[in-house]
Length: 271
Ligand SMILES: Nc1ncnc2c1ncn2[C@@H]1O[C@H](COP(=O)(O)OP(=O)(O)OP(=O)(O)O)[C@@H](O)[C@H]1O
Ligand SMILES: [Mg+2]
Image 1 (cartoon, helix red, strand yellow):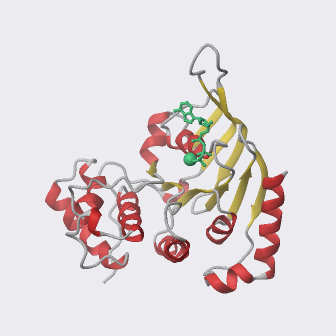
Image 2 (cartoon, helix red, strand yellow):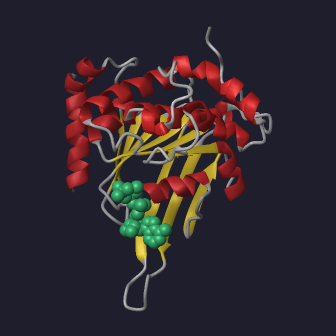
Image 3 (cartoon, protein in one colour):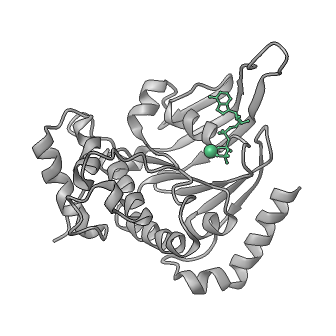
């Protein structure tokens, strides 16, 4: 039996209404000492994500990708320009509509898998037992049945990422901000997780910002790809990934259009 994710009791938000926008957003971190300059992380970044769309953001290390996600999520404010989610510019509104998944899985080692997933609901005031009850049916759907009571140390890297993703989904937010979620995985597990994520999003559509430094991953998962320059990050190209879904992985990555888009993205990265 399929179980829909239950939205948190606090605020039923419509996925249809949601969109993300950065408009001329800049962000610089203060100098660490008198002898150093401030670090300009992002320079006038303008981009938008339509509701239900997957925007992949690709860029070199240190170009401000995590900063960009934190601006969207309301964890930081831009120094100039604007960030909004669903038209709302306040940090509190952005925070309440976004679920953030960090590059490292950040599972609590003393909690079993289901208690880690249920944490998102507990943080919203749902009782521990009820939170576990709601999380339980999702384990089968995410290929984790039988591992509900495993501790993070007893799970593979890919399984830990799935528990972390399940927790991100259970937060019930319409916007997912995923920060290089597969960066720590080996290439075989990573490819499998990309397919898994594409399938999961087909079942549970969300507005997604997916940050990666891997062009192929960006093109495979994204409806559009924004390419950032080196620091300070600026959008140097936006590519519409005009490939049908579902995207069988092997056929997709060898498709002539995919290869052409990959060349465009690599050119933009090298410019
Ligand atoms: N909290 C912070 N305080 C000071 N400087 C920071 C802070 N966070 C990031 N920076 C700096 O801002 C720049 C952009 O960092 P950010 O983490 O956004 O880049 P990134 O593209 O996510 O990098 P990576 O691909 O390595 O994850 C870097 O030079 C970094 O040193
Ligand atoms: Mg980062």
